[in-house]
Image (cartoon, rainbow, N blue to C red; front, side, top):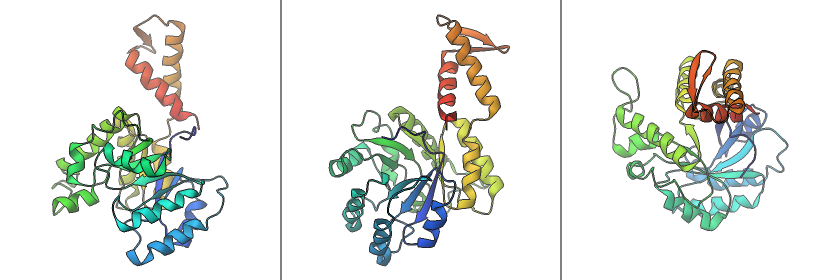
Length: 280
């Protein structure tokens, strides 16, 4: 697994569009997900793989991941052949239903890191606790509402106030808890209204506050907003450092007064995690 900080922004790029790929490679996303699944028509799958085979060596810039087609679909095995190119850091597996899927995948791919999209089928919601303790090289978990709402036969995934309906809020929360329990990076799902950047900002900041450490993007304009939301501010870093320093000075303490506020060991853990994310 990579020693680099976990990506804040994960930008989906259709793997059959050389123009969009070139733009993404020059952009500020921490990671690119070259998409061979939903954004590529069946007739273009082979063409998309040929483009990825011709990318050559990665020269800095975003880290490279590939979303393959779901397991047991005809294109899946052909997609896995791309990972003979060491420049691809990991596999994004759609429609993962349990840790068993990841173990099955790793039998073919070995130690290549896996970013699993874990809420796209109804069955997947019952298995989000299975990822803890998996022997598969699980690096990240993200959630998705689009495929789930389609599978459920929903008319809309939003309530009357325009917020995510309960089912999708539940899926999101279970993804967060499941990822943390598994020691994987929790990734928030996509913001599909690409023109509503203010809405994206609010959504990304809320996700960061809840414990997500990155977010999926579907347009380059979303990347700077996501990067900003998941980058600890100077004030947050200073506060976290003060907590860490206070416990370092008094290692036997259970509770301390730091800046007029009582902090305990869970606050210390939060501060250490924040400082680790701030090291970019």
